[in-house]
Length: 155
Image (cartoon, rainbow, N blue to C red; front, side, top):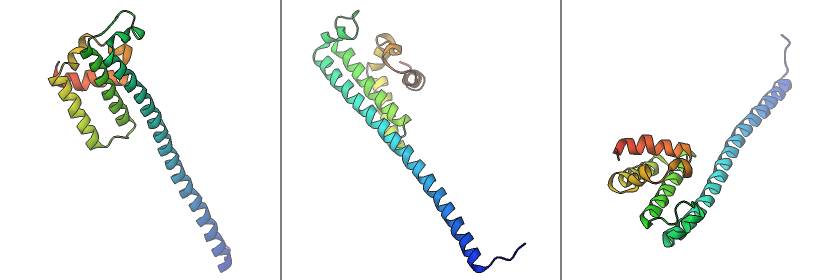
């Protein structure tokens, strides 16, 4: 092997240092882009949730407006409208957990709250008998309620 002079070794070390620095920068920039992507998705989901929140408030105040969403039901009881409202809040928390926005402790609190609502209130009865979740909620949330909440509480 050829002998390398000190200046050549220093030049080689500089090149290795620059290349390794580029890899570190690339790694952390990808990690940052992923975090920004999750933040944007979360903001969009929160914006949509605010719109649902506003509509739900209107429906709680005036249940006869439900015919705009479902012609077969000219009006719903305020209890059923409120059950939808509760379920949309639970769905929002579930989606925030899927995106890893909620910490384990926050999720544990939401999980307890949901289980208590289904166990002690009538929201579970509405879910099973009146809501038709396949029409109004995404399949992942429906499976979560059916397999983790209702299964545990046996509504």
